[in-house]
Image 1 (cartoon, rainbow, N blue to C red):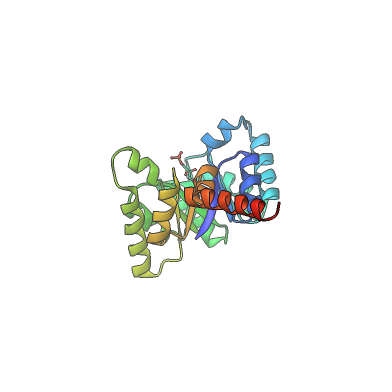
Image 2 (cartoon, rainbow, N blue to C red; image 1 turned 90 degrees about the vertical axis):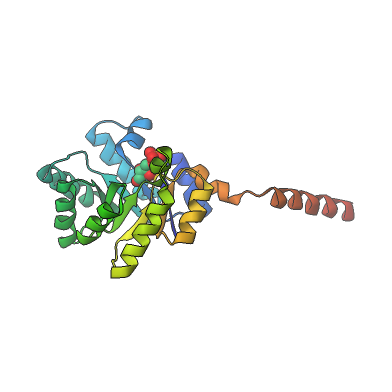
Length: 218
Ligand code: E4P
C-alpha cells in the first residue's frame, strides 16, 4: 500500500518524507488556500517545492471545470515536473479530459468520487488514480469503506489498472481498514500516518526496558 500525505504544508510533508515511508502527496484547492498559497504563480511554485521534497507522485488539481480549460491547465501542470499527476474533477468534462491525458501518456487522478459508477467511468477513461472520499461519506452517515470495497471488486473483475487512492482519510482505523480491503494507496493528514506508530504497550514496554537497563548499568 502506498502512503500519500494529503496536505500542502511543507513541514508536514518533510516530516513524513523523513520517516522514509512517504510515497507521494495529494493537494487540492482548499489545502493550498489553507496554507495561504494564492495566485497561479505561487501555486505553481509551491507544486515545484513539494516535488523537490518527495520522490513520488504529487497530485495537482485543475481549477477549470470545462474541457478546454482543464486541458490547458493540466498540460501546464504536467509540464511543471515529471512527478506531477493532473487531478481532475469527476464530472463529464473531467472524464473527457482524463481520456485525453491518458492517450497522451499524462498521468491523472480523478477526484471527488463518491460512487462505484463514478469509479467505473474513471477507470474506463484510463485514470491513473481514482480518489473515493471515504471520510466525507462517513460524515453523512454512509459507509465510505463499503465504497472502497465495491471499487476493489469491480476493478479486480475487469483487471482495471487504475489505482484506488482512498482519500478523505481521517484517522488510523481508516488506513488499516483500507489496507485490509486492498486499496492501492491511502492519502491522509500527517496524524493518520504518525498515529500508526502509537501503542501504549510499546510506550510502557520501552520505558521498562530503559529503566531496567539503567538499574543494571549503574
Ligand atoms: C483528496 O485528494 C482530497 O484532497 C482529500 O482527501 C479530501 O479530504 P477531506 O474530506 O478531509 O477534505
